[in-house]
Image 1: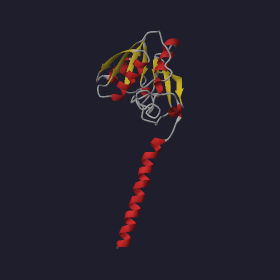
Image 2 (image 1 turned 30 degrees about the vertical axis):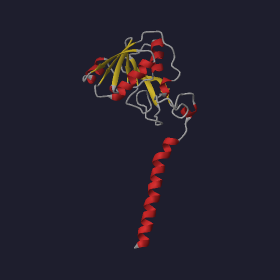
Image 3 (image 1 turned 90 degrees about the horizontal axis):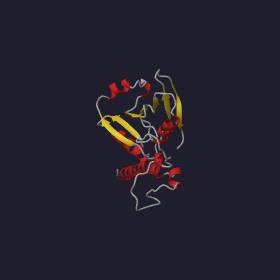
Image 4 (image 1 turned 90 degrees about the vertical axis):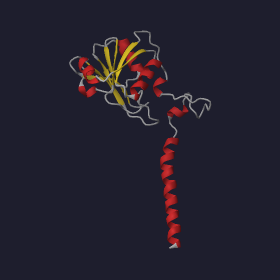
Length: 189
């Protein structure tokens, strides 16, 4: 019995170390962001600022910068997207409402493009976690569309940052008839 107890303790210990390694080491993996000039804890121990990949290379924009965002009062990721847009120079009017479904219908947003928040800027609908530079491009090009959307809530999009976890996503344009096409793709960032 004494031998059995020793082996049991040994296997439990090995299993615990293995599980700890599985949990710990994926977070230690180097990526392209770690070798950039972004201030990280690794290359700037005095800084404890979260830096988003979406806030690099912010392009200047001199057009209409007033953005009205409608969002649920209980949605935290929407607040992070608002901060992202402010970093890109937009003056944000943040309206919290429980009438999101009605609002999306009012602006003729196709159901399959819905996300958690809806913004209006210069007459365009901006739905979901769209990068600020894509919104600036929309406003500079002024295409004949109703708006742009990032359906759902893809991990890694502005406001949905989750460490190294990222999903490829597309920004979809749509017109008043509900016809869609790809406005921008973010496959690797």
